[in-house]
Image (cartoon, rainbow, N blue to C red; front, side):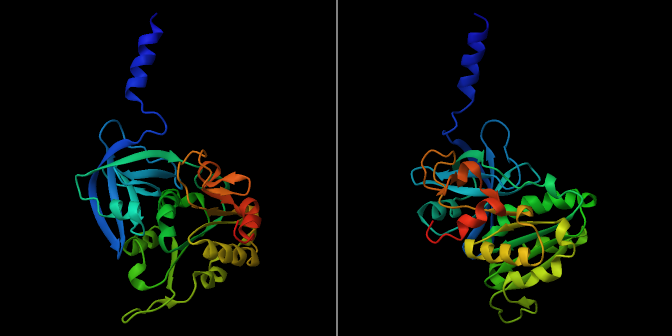
Length: 285
């Protein structure tokens, strides 16, 4: 008789897995044209940032929801999501004003496996918005700086105005990380590197057999980056890729994100290249 009321009370305060928790928008930061970072805090309970590389389903009530990677945790504990305005849902999220309410489910999926890279060198390669899910990983690496060899962060974007978190790169360098930035197309006043991010890899991989690669960006960029890392001597099993294909439900029920035998939302979004690499070579899979 004593256990039943406790179970009933718990179900009254814990939402079902598919039920979004209302979160308030604490801050909105414009990162680049069309890209903002939202700082969200739940109305009830504590924020759940999850592990680096995991994602949430973030929804605008009455519009829909989208899978958005966690891009960090604010000093006040708020969960950060960096959103590009490309469709109806992300348009509503990107335009959510401070103080408004959004729905959040998660965190979901499998994040970056950092434990396997301890003691060795690390190369982080980001293309465009792919830097967002890598940022919590970079912060974790910098906090445990003495646990790794050389840490290289290679960032690529189409143009200088589309570079994310550029102000943070100086802080990463101050913590002992090697940071290299390049753009596909220069602009007036740009004095940095110009070219594909894959061109930076030869200078970043010093001890291939003890190097782990973490990669996120457009699929074509990840495919060529993985090839460049392997050409430099990095083992496929030490290359991790974040796949973010068309994730709708977040829990492997709807099948929209199926990639061969895997559901990206449930089995990923982070996979080892030895697992997902062959699938990425299959056209239209």
